[in-house]
Image (cartoon, rainbow, N blue to C red; front, side, top):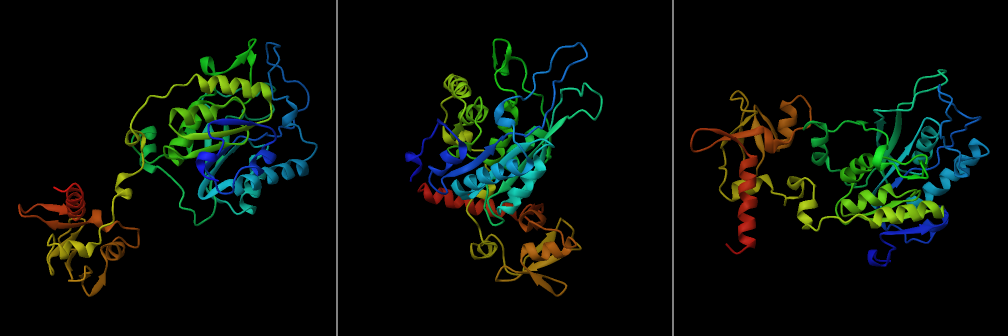
Length: 369
């Protein structure tokens, strides 16, 4: 079934395993799942001011045993795996009650775990009984379908959320409160509604515009709301008709800005750029056979360029990456950025400058210039 035949931007009512079975195999790009936590609560919980805490008391979070919960988890995760594309990814969120059990099943089913991400709640609910530490975080497991999957990860797009540095796996985000928290008659509509900021990071980091995001435990529709804002397609599965009505009204109220696709594309453009073989720089006259290149501008590390594009230094020979790795003590090395040539003005420039000139020339040729 083609994507235009999928129930895109729709909420499917019913049990997630049954609904997933009706979807075509390998048809979605990303799955975000916020399954029941199996909290194992017993008795009421009261604040010091004698007001009752609104806890997760719904029947959907009650399981008679760990074995029953494991069976349920294996069923829905297997169903998710079937509909996930070969290069797709899975995000699952949970607490200490269930995340370790889910992690084992995820690995048993063949998913390849990429990260465990901590959602650190900047405003967690206190432990009113004072018998343990305040539970101030939840854990997200980020997995590729297989070890070989070429999953989407927008590395550079996440840097602005960490002051321009590589994004960390601990995310400090407040609980869903205030105007964002959906209420009915003054009470929470859903006990575990997630903040949109959390889903924003998940979807921005691991999807592209037009990708299909599936949420098998849709609840009040946070995944769909964020997906719509980011111009992703979505499919929600939910068995509670009240939640479905809330989610549908919430998502229908969202009107994304109409923009060109390139505005929403946060992928690393350098990785998407056409590949330029290093030897092409010689063939095209940007470098000359025998020309000197310098590793990290160090004139003591002077290599010579062979006619076939290999470098030779003190009897050692290899590509710009191989020889650079050797000089870096075995660390991975992007030779384009670490080897320098001397330009006509006598200034040292990275050979990446020459690669960009080749790409620019190709673009001009495509435009007929």
